[in-house]
Amino acid sequence: VVGDDHVLTDPDLTAQYARDWTGRFRGSTPVVVRPASTDQTAGILRVCSAAGAAVVPQGGNTGLVGGGVPLAGEVVLSMRRLAWIDPVDRLAAQVSVGAGATLEAVQAHARPHGLEVAVDLAARGSATIGGMVATNAGGLRVIRHGDMRAQLAGIEAVLADGSVLRRMHGLVKDNTGLHFPSLLCGSEGTLAVVTAVRLKLVSVDAEQTVALLCFASLVEAVAAVAELRAWPVPLDAAEVFFADGLALVTRHLDIEPPVPRDAGAYLLIACGGRSDLSTELAAAVAHLSCAPMDIAVATEPRSRAELWRLREAHTEAINAAGVPHKLDVALPAAALAPFADTVRTRVTAVEPGAQVILFGHLGDGNLHVNVLGAEGDDVDDAVLRLVLEHGGSISAEHGIGVAKKQWLELDRSAEELEAFRAIKRALDPQGILNPNVLV
Ligand code: 2HG
Ligand code: ZN
Image (cartoon, rainbow, N blue to C red):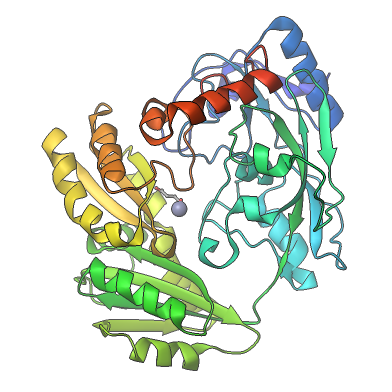
C-alpha cells in the first residue's frame, strides 16, 4: 500500500517508534508503516483488519501515558508523513491540515496572516495535530481558549475497516446530528485514525506581558488567580511551580532565576491583546488581597521567553534527573492546596526515597505530579486515589493511555465505561485499534 520504503522492519529503525520519550514505556513492533495519504491509511487498515492485526496509531510520540507505544507487539501506524497544510482560509480564520503536521509548522504557517492555533504546549516542535486531537491535548493557554476539542471545525478519520469519515467544510453552525470531532477527540486512537483536521484559528496578540509572581504559599497563588480572573485583563495563562522544580530547572539550564529561590509558590501569568496591557496587569496585581513577595515582569520577546523557560523546562529537567512517573491530574480550585500539602506524604509513605515535583496549569486546576525514584505502581495508586478523595479527575490533559487504565473504573462509572465499550464495539468490532488503551 505504501511502497517498501515506508514499511520499516529493521529493529534499529523501529526501536524509536516502540518506546516513549520519558523511557517509562518500552515495547516492540514487527513493523512500522508510514502512510502519506488518507487513501494509504485506509488501505493499511483494510489489510490489518483482514489479518486481524492490532494497530497503534502514532503521531509525534510525545504522549506521556504510553498511549502511542506498541506494548503488546502491535503494528505501528506512524502518521508523520501526512504533514500537508492547506493555505489559510482568512475569511473563516481556519486552516485544514494533515494529521502529521506538527503544531510548530502550523503556527509558522498561520502567523504571517496574524493568526495562530489557540492551543500551545512545550512539545510543539514534535507533537502532531492528529495526536493532539486524539488525546485532546490541553497545554498552556486553555484558560483563555479551551482545549484541543474547542479548536475543531472539522475532522477526517479512517475507521478500522478502512472506511473514511470526512466532514471538513468548517461550518461554525452545523447541527445535523452526531459531531464526530467531539467523539473522536480524546478517544486516543481507539475508535478511528485521525487523518486530517480543520482548525479554528485565533488572532495573534500584538502585545504580550508575562509576569512571575512569588507567593508565600499555594493558597495565596490560587486566590490570586481567582482575583486576577475577575479583573478586565484576559489571562492567557496562569501556571504554577515550586522551589524544588525551580532548583532542578535552573541547575539543568545552568541559569540564575530572576526571583528569589525560596518562595512557597511561583505563579507565572501571561496576558495579551492589541495594546500593551502591562499597566493594567500591574494595577490588578497591586490590588491582590495577598501581595506577592517578589515579581519579575517581561514584555520583550526574549525576556518573556526566559520567564516561560522556567516553567516549560520542568519536563526536560525532570527527565534529565531520572525516569519519572507522571500523574497529570485535575482538582477543584478549593482542593488544590490541600491536595498539594498531602501528596508528598502519601507518596513517601509507599516509596520512602521518592522525590515529588509539582507544577502545572493552576488556572485550569491542573497539576502535574512528577515522581522520581518510584519502582512499581504503588505511587500511582496513592496519588490517583488522593486525587479522587479530593473530588478530582485522574487525567486533566494527557489522557488515560496504558498508564492510568487500571484506575479509570475508579473515576468513571460502570455505566459510562459500558457506553465507551459499546461505541468501541460499534466502530471497531474486531478491536484492532489501540486495543490496550483506555478501555
Ligand atoms: C506540561 O504542562 C506538559 O509541560 C508536560 O503537560 C507535563 O511533564 C509533565 O508532567
Ligand atoms: Zn501540561
